Amino acid sequence: MTALVASAFRERYAIQLLRDGGILIDLATGAYQRLNTTAAQICSVLNETDDLVTARVQVAQRIASGEQEADRALQDVLESLSQLGPRREPPGAFRYLPSSEKQYVLNDKGRPQLLVSAAGTAVRRASPAVPLSIPQMAEYLRAIAPKLLFLQSMPVIHGAASRTTRGVRIISGESGAGKTTTARAFDATGCALFAEDMLVVASSSPLAVHRGSEEVIKAWILGSAERLVGDPEVTVDATSLRETASGESTAVSEIWFIDRSRRNRSDHGITPQRLGETDGTLAMMTSLFLGSASPETWRRFLSVAGRIASSTPIYEASMPEGLDRLRDAARRYSENSAS
Image (tube, rainbow, N blue to C red; front, side, top):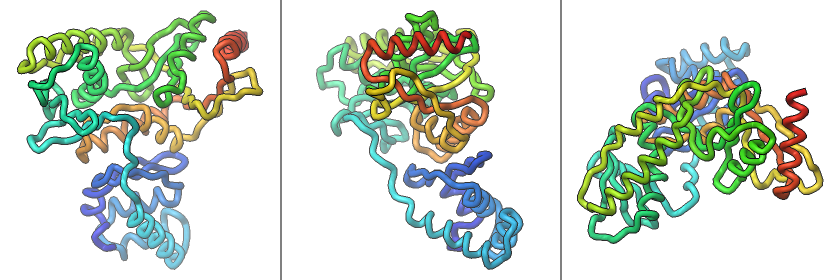
């Protein structure tokens, strides 16, 4: 356990301290866990202290306890770290992984399809001899475009968005949760549709996104798909994706996370419930696109998620079941918000 102190701890883990706890990522596996305030302070001490003897003293000071209690708390945290399991596999057939040539590869059902440069600035086909249609290639490029932007230092949020009187409201959640459907329901009430699926972050604290970035991404996907299908040996330049940052920076007022499991068949209203910073950060980690699994990018990813959750109100929102009830609920929510 002494090996998990100071430099060895920093090499293995990344930590984000928050007002109500924290998040810890195992950089070797990509697994992460929520920390309560005591565990977050203990991990912070382990990150900064050279030996366990000093760590005990520091932990006792941080959590205002005796050294015996501090030692028990410290051992409990070390034990929980040893039991942190592997990262959950993402859904779907696509896998985006490091390749042996210091690149990234997009696999579809185990078959390599695209190779991405380490900086996210170039894309080429991994299997040029395999025939692909333009729609299929566009699907692959759509999967990697936000990852390319992250590698180029432009984080992307997976979500639809609406303009409100207070700023942009982002509606996020897993694929199939109803993000775009909900944003369109609000569009009919006068909250104009701002984006349908992807938003490029202009500032993480306070959170702001670039207007029109989704259109730039879609244009790059279509043009690149045509080139990669027309010439299977070509390498496509991805630096033009930086044009997503050319649109004006627009402030985000709040983020809603929706889920199909929270659709309510008996309630006709929309009910947002505010999340604390730690749960908000966990939610953002499901919404932001990660460009690689290197320690440096994991730390940047965690930092961006934490800054967003610390500066922007984040909610879990329950929605009514059925499109007609959703439209009616969106209308009533907009009217109540404006009054």
